[in-house]
Each structure stands twice: as structure tokens, then as C-alpha cells.
Length: 340
Image 1 (cartoon, rainbow, N blue to C red):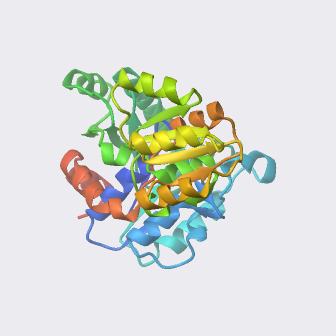
Image 2: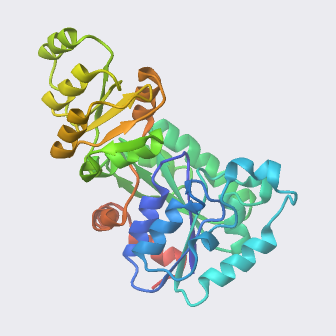
């Protein structure tokens, strides 16, 4: 038995919900993600995560048919990969009781190659589950469109799990009036939402030069240290001290780097490709505050920090299992998927 998990938008929570469902199933789990998206050093991060959490055998690169979605139109000559999809699915699902199949960013990704979520569900003869995130009206709109897409491909959509949204009872009524089953509403969780220093480094691509022991610290706000030290101190006196902040400042701004220590920053980004003093590096190591050096200017680096999202880690598995178990109708999902 298998389930295709897709979403209405990028970062809606497909991987989290998929992990949670798998963690609540007692049989052997398999995993397939036809189109790799979060690729680092040739490996899709979601494939690596599922391999570790469920102790899956085999090369995680085989969990994907392709690992560079953004070049698929340019690199691939064949318009349809149905045969390859079936063969890889048969290989990965052999000896497994339940195979979780994750789409790329949204349900439409991969349509050019016949690998969109509705197409995959149709070819493999398994149902789909939609993860929706955002304002209620957007969730309803996109869920209706997803339902149409699955129907066009003669595939079954079990329903929708709403993640990180203020979804109310009246919203559920509007959804179900259109024949779409609401299978859960998962509230936002700060631990899974807030990125760590390591997540920011992944976004920035900079060089870690100190404080590696603090990579798991959370980063909630961004402070740009482009003003003078006196101005910065006066400004901070009239505002709440930034909590779990990243200080973005020039590599030659020893004054602002020292201020980062004073206000209890959890992360420091030094711009302009300039090394700080040895005293600053020693202090960062002592306080376990990661320091990353980048070539960008302050504004660019700060913008990139704001865009960073939290990545899931195997250590998040217990929390994910608890959240999905509490807020998702797993009984209905397993029954409709044909699992006991």
C-alpha cells in the first residue's frame, strides 16, 4: 500500500506530515520522492531524513528519479517517465508494507515529465493526501483546485491536512461542502518553525570561523549592525532586547561584534569577506556563538537570514510523531489507504 503526499505550496509541511504518518505505522516503511528538490552534495535532504528515521536500506539517491527539478525541462528529452517511475516504485516498495511517496514543492511540479502528484497517484494506483498552509481562503481555493486535478487524472484524493493555519469550523464546512475531506489541522509549532544557526549557514553558504558548538541554537530575529556603536546602544535602550538574534555587521566592525555579545545574540554574520580579530573569535567560541563570514553586503546577508527556514532533523521525530498523532485523523487515512 502507498500514499502520495503533496501540497499547495512550498514548505507547507509535506515531509513533516509524511514522517508523522510513517512513525505511527507499525509495519515496514518505504520512501520515494520522484523529483529531488532540497539537494545538497547530490543528495535530497528529505531522502536522507527518511533513510535515517526509518533505517531504510539502499542508496538514498535511488529514492529520487531526478535530483535537479530546476533543470528538468532543459536536461530531459523524454516528455514522460511513466515506465521509469513504475520500475523504481516496484524496486523501492518490495518487502515494504507501506510506501510514502512525496511530491516536489507542490502538486503541479513535474507535470512536464508526467511526475506531478496527480499523475504519480494515477500511474501507481495509490491515493493522495494534500497538505495545505496559509490563510483559510487560500487553503480552500487551492484544495478545490487540487481536487479537480486529481479527478482529471482519475486519481483519488483522500483529503486535506491543514498546517500552520487559523482554520475554523466554518472553514471546514466550506471545504467539505465541495466534497473535500478535512483530515486534520496542525497548529504552528515554534520548535519546528524557528530556524537554527545551522539552517542560516545553509542559506548563506558562508564560512564558519568560530562557535561551532552553538550551531543548534535557534535564531528568531535579525539585527543589522550598520550604525555607530553609540547609536545602536541608544536604539536598543528604547526597544526590547532582541531575543535569539543574528547580528549582521561588517567583518571590520569590532564595536558591533562586541555589542552582539552584550545583547546576547545567538549568531553572528560578518559581511565583506573580512576576518574579525582573534579576541572576537575567542569570545565567540567561549560563548558558543557561531560566527560566519560571507562576501555579501549587510542588506543582502540580512535578507537571506530572514528567508531561512527550519530544516527537519531526525531528533525532531518524537515531536513530529506527537503532533501528527494528536491533530491528524490517522485512523481514517490508514483505512482509506487500505492499511489495517
